[in-house]
Image (tube, rainbow, N blue to C red; front, side, top):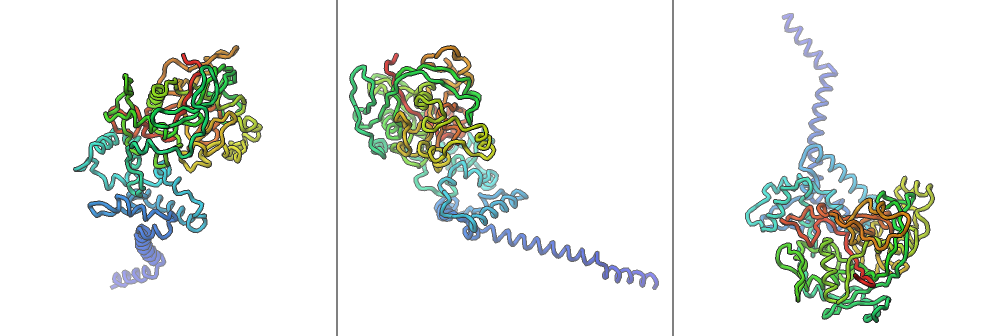
Length: 514
């Protein structure tokens, strides 16, 4: 009996113990918390909830027009299945970040000021989709009925999983974009008038005359304007104290450039389409070859090379350096005048307009050391941004797309978009130390860079670059393999880059060609 009473006493003491009740309360709170958390997660994972506070006005509409909503199987892929990781801690972490971002935008941002087209670019979309989420549903990459193009693309994806992402090719699968599907150029596209007519300049020039003129492609009435640039001596390269200076821009060297003509504008889609329609090759990746009556040209592009931004006077983009050189051969062939890509020295000479500053329309090399230091510290630029905006299309004003030829003012020599819109191919192979090899005691005449190499020089900034890349002396180069990373063809295209959208070119003509 004593033992029973003793055990009963222990139970009474235990029932009165704060530890027990604390454990019970903890378990209850945990259960309720888990249930509430699961309920909150379930409620906030619905498409209706996403739409209730998502400030993008067309997110739901474009989703319901896309393949994740309208498809033969009738299976609907919901918002969270693409825009959040499949599960685990990453799921809740990304959901918390997305929720906080949408909450802030909904209540504190001026929704009307948000540039949705900019946020719909591949560069932005890749930040809000997850590769593992795509693969959770699409585990079979070679389903029955997959086209040969799809098979090639998925084999390429399997081969380079760290370099190629699903969204690289399927950007508009989740949110349909009219006109974003593959487009093949037609005669109508090539014949479309320029967005802004060319000026009526001189179309015939006397032998030996050196003036601005307009050339015309016979039979197509497609015009392009050339600006006469008198030769001279200038300082190529940039001083080390120039804001944004890079090592491959020095040492500075004296260069003598012979007189030449340069395209008033970057080669436009109107001009490129004329070339395409006269030379298009239906075979696969055929190299250019001139015969008595015809010149081989590009194969059809995989997608819409203008990215849906418009054609006309906008600069032609996504073609390879090889394609740009073949274009120059064709243009020379049909006009009877010899055109080519500019040398790096010619390009910089035309961009400087006889001025030593980074921009011929702005004074100074980037401010005092104090201004440059402040600019680097706070991410600004030491130049007049309002004035820079008048002459250049770059990341601060472009909405991440190309602009028509006359969107900005020309430089003092009457040449448009030398400092932005698209980066431009040059004739030279790229050598980071090329200026070191030029003589320091006398001007070098008409240099053309190294005799051989793999990459070519690219000059000028673009709609996607910061202001420091707009400088007349800034140097860049092609990245041939990287720019073809998502191209699934074997061999890869020699005509079209799959992974760069901000490079084009302009043409020059020598006064006395060799």
